[in-house]
Length: 119
Image (cartoon, rainbow, N blue to C red; front, side):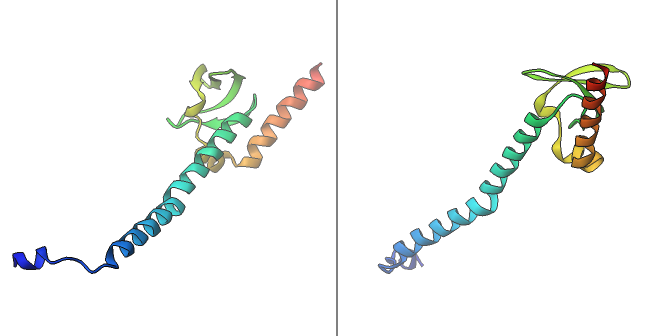
């Protein structure tokens, strides 16, 4: 039995092993790493494009409307008052599924036009 383990491998198997490992790495990149990077980029763009008056859902499940946009976070207006949250607390998936991308944009546009009319 020990002699079977001590026998050498054929010459071509080491290069084949390297090729297979390379193919596996490329597969992992396209199936796991690249989609995750794309999702992070979309989340960052979503957080940067948020405006005052946009209805959002936080990762904790809290629903509210953005009252102020600050450098390090947002002030969210809820039924119980105003609360400050980090930008990362706003969930893109939950907000779009709850209000839809178009509904969030419409709410922000209505608020902007209302403030412009008051001036």
